[in-house]
Amino acid sequence: MTEAVLDIKQWGNSLGVRLPAAVAREAHLHVDQRVRVSVEGDQVIITPVDGSRHTLEQRLAAYDPKRHGGEQMITTQTLGAERW
Figure (cartoon, rainbow, N blue to C red):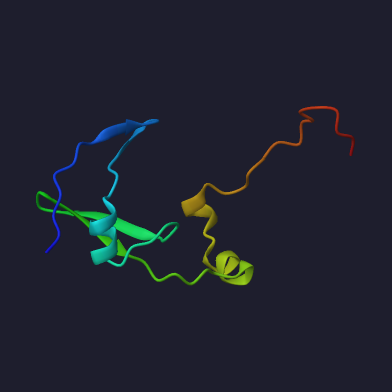
């Protein structure tokens, strides 16, 4: 088992931890891989997520206006130099 004691650092408005190469290698993690971060009790769990990307059709099928805030621009008022 590979183990490391790390410091949490400020990263913008978030907190971040850099994983040492040996830890990432043993966990089979790589650059740009998607992971899920969850909390169970007092433990933070990092789990790899299926790497497949959704198509536009799959993303549109999953879109829920109530969950995602509905229309982007609900006004008919012009905001700039556009003409209708």
